[in-house]
Length: 121
Image 1 (cartoon, rainbow, N blue to C red):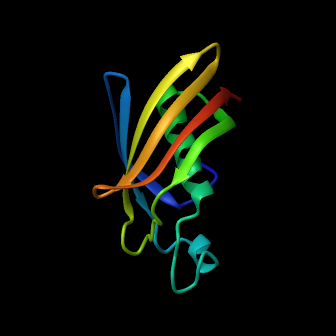
Image 2: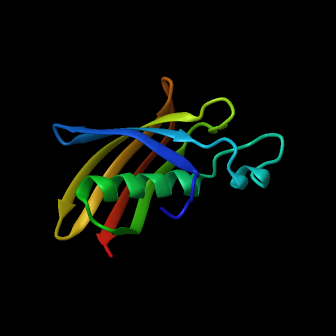
Image 3: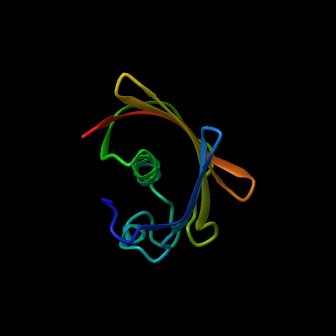
């Protein structure tokens, strides 16, 4: 985990090829001192890191992001208002590359959609 104390994975459940992870963002993390004071916004790159970290846990391998596509940030995630997130991942493996399709939500609001290719370190 590159983001020490930035988030906590509360649960990970995989069923029928789909993984659902419940994650809580630490609204008091130092990253929000600069992003942005008085109006905290969870950095998109941090959410992408969480997707990679969840995938690593699921496949039980150390991974790095080879590429991402179709990255659509649809809503701002303010950790003071919505610190509990749901990550829905569809993970497949093709020739040593883990292909991930992710939707990140808070409540019923979709905050992020993305596709990511991850390789074993």
